[in-house]
Length: 565
Ligand SMILES: *[C@@H]1O[C@H](CO)[C@@H](O)[C@H](O)[C@H]1NC(C)=O
Ligand SMILES: *[C@@H]1O[C@H](CO)[C@@H](O)[C@H](O)[C@H]1NC(C)=O
Ligand SMILES: *[C@@H]1O[C@H](CO)[C@@H](O)[C@H](O)[C@H]1NC(C)=O
Ligand SMILES: *[C@@H]1O[C@H](CO)[C@@H](O)[C@H](O)[C@H]1NC(C)=O
Ligand SMILES: *[C@@H]1O[C@H](CO)[C@@H](O)[C@H](O)[C@H]1NC(C)=O
Ligand SMILES: *[C@@H]1O[C@H](CO)[C@@H](O)[C@H](O)[C@H]1NC(C)=O
Image (cartoon, rainbow, N blue to C red):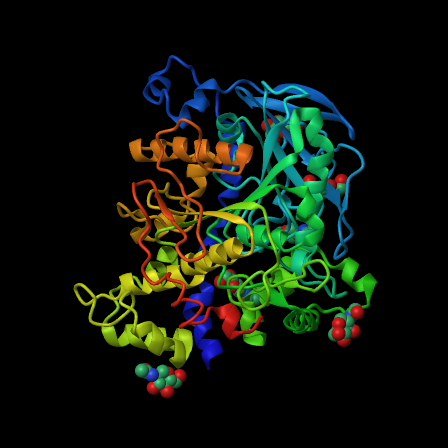
């Protein structure tokens, strides 16, 4: 019972992003490639002067450029002033086999057009002309001022989308402004998604994670030719992309490939999958595929279209009924297989010794889209109680009701959606992240923890009116702040874009998000008890609420503890 009820509310929290993530991904291409060059003297350009959007006014007609690398001549374009952009294929793979790093520089999917952007990895909800299985590509954004011995850091970004959808061309992920502001190289990568990346008839696991490791290996080979220091790579991602970063932190063989990590809005309540759960999920997948696991002729004859929209979508919708730990949001995900990944990296088993600096952030209303999207009308007390009991099971329900943050008798106007929203945010994201920070610090690492109190509404989030209310920051609303891609930022957003990019620059260069000689709040590293979380967008510390060491993870178990993942 517990399992099924958890499903109903909490494990579906990331679903929000799915329905629109793909359609808008084309928006990126349009805005990058068909926007006319704007006249710098136009009213628009004078109006937006000194804001991030001003870069549109510097847009140049694409100029082809080439750079010699160890893998051959790289060809790219300048289409935002000051930044070279290279689309490149970093790895190739047979279907459901581990990928290998390319040995020669090549444009994505055999393209001959240096201006073109990579096709997405196969995924549902989009036209099949927008994707290809030959999708292990990345987009590099490189300041034109760099030269071969610049030795600058690199930020490698992993997109979100529940390991199911998304691409390097999603809205807001143009790395030009971030590369310029951080004096660094920005690499936005793609990796195999859904069943093609995480559930294989031949029992392979972690294929998409292996792709990300190969992206790192590719970068270490080519960065020197562009002015990047291969020993200064920071890996970063948002949502399931941050979950991927957490997985990379748990891959011993990848530790030499990066120096630090940034995890934005990782749903840490969902641990990795266990091998035994994964075996069941793989068998379930094969049972719906229409081929036996060993019939390679049959498996190879399936189109990507059939896989992602047939058995793949079915797997996404149904896995949670087969294995509750699968969750409804990330049923196809990283597996603690004991070889590639060797620890749960959570509170359920010995935490390895760690040393890298990490930066962890959440937004204040992570659960806002799902809760207010699922419940457009006020929730009275009786319904609230029933939802919490059904979602967490009676044991956790009793403990939750003892917390000031979630107790009954606290609603204004008889509406318990605010409490439910905080509960969703705390359980899936915020408190789970703080617990991770304490574990990280207790085992030798350094962690900086922040909470966004200002965001830029991500495309699609306006479908839920709550997410557009003043002061509300929903899941994904941090993306365009970090990338500096919010279209017309207001004063508070501009200030936060400048601050976060300065902090990221400092973190990329030194592992510390406090720039020298800046007037920004001192961002103290987390301790083993107090994580010293700061508000990003306003001054002061983030409220602790129920995210104390003794409540979440002790008095009330996370899902990864309940399911013993
Ligand atoms: C190359 O790709 C760009 C972007 O998709 C497109 O605008 C342009 O027409 C293409 N050029 C050729 C020669 O196909
Ligand atoms: C990707 O490349 C393959 C092989 O050249 C080609 O058949 C396919 O049409 C390409 N995909 C797209 C969507 O262009
Ligand atoms: C995958 O693993 C399951 C469980 O161990 C096993 O029954 C099955 O034969 C394996 N399939 C392949 C193709 O190796
Ligand atoms: C792509 O989609 C179209 C329209 O749904 C379909 O007719 C075609 O068979 C699909 N192509 C592949 C390779 O799956
Ligand atoms: C799976 O869920 C998606 C999104 O809710 C829905 O569009 C689709 O019809 C479902 N597919 C199956 C096979 O249940
Ligand atoms: C919680 O749910 C269980 C069944 O799932 C039920 O037996 C119990 O009465 C419920 N408790 C409350 C307080 O609603």
